[in-house]
Length: 600
Image (cartoon, rainbow, N blue to C red; front, side):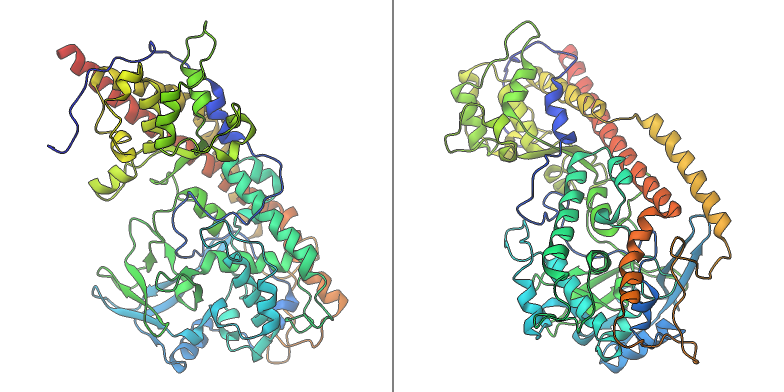
């Protein structure tokens, strides 16, 4: 268009090369061993907007279930009655329970009971039927909020995931006296046979290492650190104290982990108030970014409405889009990944200007430092700090390096989104274009360009120069791929073996629903003459040990470990496939420009 800058004849700084210094790619496989200062929110992986029900294993002990007292045989009937009696609406939906024998899972979702037009109101969940940390009136609970780790987001407030988990435990400790006991009775780990989502921080160590991707491993370790630290330093000492908001119910690391896993995977962030809520029934609707047929909105009175966004046929499963989340975010917060690929997957790594210059230097030459004009350009683009730093700041302070990405954005919805979310981070494109300029005179040709203009892949500075830029990106993609511990072909073979082992384990357990000893599945629910769980009174030491050991048992459960390994390999395979698609796109663009040069 007329608004696009004209081409300029800018020769590349260096000859084309077939390799790139591995130090740039290695940043995506580093995870520094230092105590984190804050709970790491998903800064680079999409918005915190909603929840998932995809999961792998059950969690709570029999005592936690019995503490709820009256779990009904038909949870949908109880939930529907409770919601409608609280002023809500339930219309045209039913709860479906699916037993996936191939994977050994029990899964629930909501389905249409009739043909539904677009715009049909299905659920209206009033505020009293939502788990909310902004409705807390127990001063002992709010005092705990002040002891929580601070989130890494812009607000810097207490981590919302921990706040919501503490509210859930408060209601759990009240049993049937809690106004939310009907909702809690339907949650994973409490409702019979419904597994708990194996979010990132619950994965066993081998599965974490098999991810082969340091940014996700570092995020998982950050969450594990704060889970352990807060449990050991705050929660363990609460029973029997005046500060205990849980009525003597002991909350150790395992029970707290259950609560965090449930709320982090089932809560919605309300754009209207920036608060997170966990609404009954809506929290059972799964994620489908391409086939979402429903959408959720918040109302002035605090209610959440779910309406159809398309026509829905009778018996069709209801689906929401949680947003453009990559598999990093989905695994960390929801405990599942999209397969075979997630169109929004990206590889993140720390941009190192000095390392890039070293990579661009011919092999026989000493790597040059940044010229003053190059440093000035990087600072203007926000890729280097503007304040004076020591000469080796890139090496001594890696957290100062901005994180950039290469990924697959082929499925973006519009040309505007494609420009905003191109396969190669616009900051990386701008940096490579700037650092491959020949001299300060060439810099004057881009001095007035903004970061978005200089980083727009569709608007090169010149054909000849852009070919050199694309070659650098090809080398970088290659280095990133080689930084993994296995290839795409090897991952596919390993995944096939793991899935066969998973099917064999599921076939061997088919029909086994009874409880076993402490080394097997969850113990049976303690029941009364009515067949429903009954309250067992005060917490005994035996009950406390049974509860605290349940999630610990899952870490040694063979079926759990296989399922987690499957997810880990699926994750790393999807990441490599996304990188492969990005590389194909860069190579295609490079060949196109080379062909144009030959024609000219």
